[in-house]
Image 1 (cartoon, helix red, strand yellow):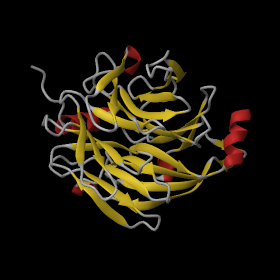
Image 2 (image 1 turned 90 degrees about the vertical axis):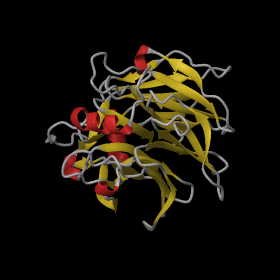
Image 3 (image 1 turned 60 degrees about the vertical axis):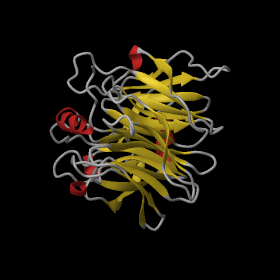
Image 4 (image 1 turned 135 degrees about the vertical axis):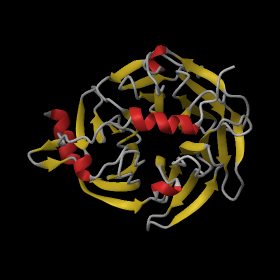
Length: 330
């Protein structure tokens, strides 16, 4: 029988595999001394020792944020929390100690969905929190998997879950039901000899396709959704994003991506032609960045704080559009 892929095992391995020695590279996303992201600051400081290891982020229509707190170090409960535009924090969900809350997303009706990693078969899976409601599980997922990134299609009917261990994207009915394998493929797999399997990680539904990052392969993939809802042919957008975690887009129409590179402690821009630029590094205070989100010209970055001195936080910066697109043309 396969052993459950517990949060304890995941965190212990991640600390060794995803967090190398402190990185000391300089940002390359500058054009004529004009940085692509400016005015970077800490918007909210988290307490890593209390389990506040920021894992994922959703920007809400009112400018507030939904943050997943992984629940490290082991023994501290994970949380899903709301952060107002002024920085006020409200805990929406508190999970069980030993579990992890990973990807989160919001449906068109305002319902929040989030992934729970658990060795307990009664908790592992996708959960929902409707406005004014209480958390309930939408679909179960295997305890020997690793439900990581989460996204929803524009209709609000289907959720997609990136399973970092099983080389799989799960499709889950948002109204509740059975999780179905949408795609299993070597392009979603971790490295064959890895001591800590972390393949498919971040996932976004964007412009008619499911986009997926693969951490160990250092790739960003685009998978068109066919007219029947099935997975189309996998397109490799880039294979130059070592340590990629979660990511997001400049806008609803743009295919320009801001990607969090966890181990290298960087944020990179990926252009539609697959070229990449490093735009933020440890010089701007990054600490194990896990995800990005964009609202207008504001970029938000969650930092898990895996590496010593374990400074977990939410950062924000201003996107310099002229520098961003000058890079694309240069």
